[in-house]
Amino acid sequence: MIFKKLELIGFKSFFDKTTFFIQDGLTGIVGPNGCGKSNIVESLRWCMGETSAKSMRGSGMEDVIFSGTSNKASKNIAEVSIDVENKNNEGPVQYREINQINIRRKIEKDKGSKFYINDKEVRARDAQMFFAD
Picture (cartoon, rainbow, N blue to C red):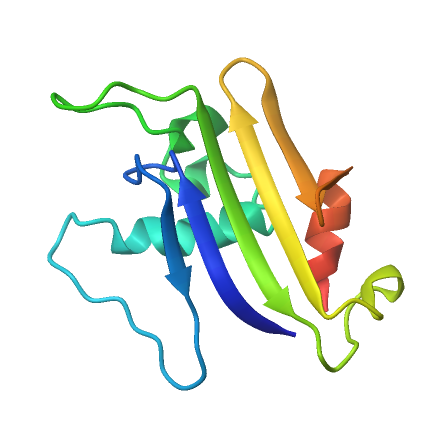
């Protein structure tokens, strides 16, 4: 399986919908201190099923939701989506025949987070196991 796209909405420092296309070769993210580079890596880990708020540099999992700035209001929802290409028919059995797979995690304040694989709600464990191999 090959990561093809990462999309963030309201995750940590990413207020607006932000899309990263991961293409063949080397994909790098460069920027000054404090611009959100580590938030991109954390968004991948979070969408893949991370459960420790401490490892996400927060005191609670809701700390991944954009908390606002002097110019922008806080959000109530954060969402991260990963698109993977599955041309080699790898991964869990139920997804081996699917060429494009989307894994998404969404969290709402006071409601917790939900996982989706190809827009079907799944358990957190299902999303974690998807990436386990």
